[in-house]
Image 1 (cartoon, rainbow, N blue to C red):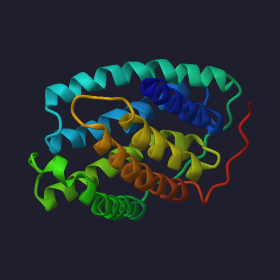
Image 2 (cartoon, rainbow, N blue to C red):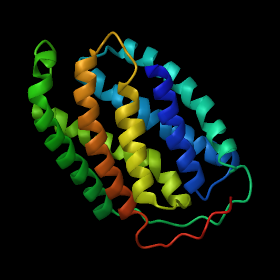
Image 3 (cartoon, helix red, strand yellow):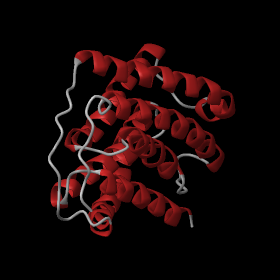
Image 4 (cartoon, rainbow, N blue to C red):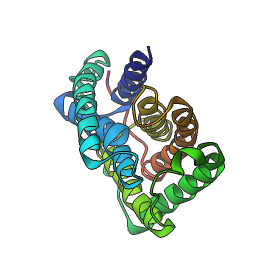
Length: 225
């Protein structure tokens, strides 16, 4: 049942992204595959490896089924969203050092705030793990924030209606709730529950900020269904 919910949530968000995007066809499919795999698997597995929750081999093994899932869901979402044809002109959205600094700063603040609030509920799980020093964790979040942004940037650049809400759902659901639903041998259900609350809320807020930063100055042309 949880696997079914995982697939349904991911598909629903990808469908929404497809409906909101100005891109079409295989270009849009590739964008969704990149977005889903990076946000919903690769970037989270990177942190799991650093935290010692998974070995590199285990992370690579976990990445394979996730890649297959998003390879199937992405074209299906594009098809059912009616986005194989009739695209609209792309919008050029500038990336500046200031905006990237805001992206990194926002992610760091949200990450540490959410993590601090949830830590009392998960401390027993990490008591047996080797957690890196604070400066290493903070450095990792710089990389992860930019990876999250880079995965969504092609869609933002190509034009994305209601970008703040859409990106909030992508990061909050695909990158937060959904990957923590299925049972796995590495993280018990109660820890996944608390992490799900932590990551879904902080990632959703991060998505709102990213969407706002990279669309507010340029109104989008309506996308054709």
